[in-house]
Image (cartoon, rainbow, N blue to C red):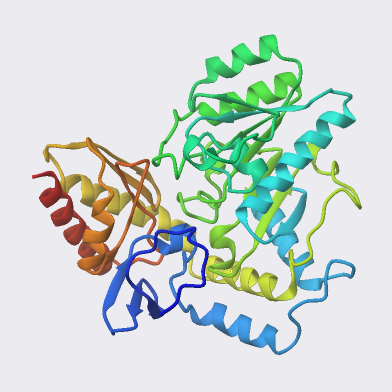
Length: 390
């Protein structure tokens, strides 16, 4: 069969035909326990009936009109997200990268309005914010930047979880207007900072009149056991970006703003043809309904604690394991050596996982994972890791 697709992905040799809950089935009828959720996207599992129903009903009414006109479902979704996050304004795009692009533009315009020449944003090494030119420039990952130079200027990288480095920059650079940071680094290896890290960044932003911009594309929507990860710290960002699980697989991104950031963007400063269309908003509203009706956020908190405990017990005293860490249903098992082959090994055993930062087994299972499925995940993964490290 001819291959008409650009070779931008190194795909695994499997094609899925359908799914249900935490399971996917390939075209040959083999079943796979999904511990990746489409990379933290399908938090309600596959083919959730409420989301499917909302999509079918909305597709029969109206899919797209453009943002030249009022969109009732978009306003409903914006209102609900702002209530949940204690934010004031929201812009809808189609992806996490677009949400972060909106945040970057907002920060630059915020600086320009304050008469700051060449507004600069502090970003973190080992971060990941997207693959557009601006978001890959903001990402602290040389691998995704290679070959795309010259990068977009206006970003200063510092080490993650290093507040002193940010304080040093504050003392020497008066062009800084914002900090862009993930509450937990996902692609960087499920890196969890000190408990007060975000609080200290919030204090620095308040002190210097910067914007605190949180990339919650992977950590948001209940993944860590709160609606949004920063809520563990009891703070409010100036800007927060969402995507991934917001539509449970339907492309949608959101950039939320509050306080001094709320009204920076005005008509003509930003836009999107497809962003916040009726179909995507109907899906996201159905997702929020299920989250609230089924108490999904609390379930993620409880299940995450159980999964972390079970993995820690099963893999205790196994040589070659550096650390098992996580918050909610976002977990990483760091090994002492690169382990990319574990992904293919797991696939052969009917398990979908991911290895990021070369040696961290990343688990992002659906938040609806049952205890039986959890035990199966722990059993299968423990055997794979023990055999690999033997």
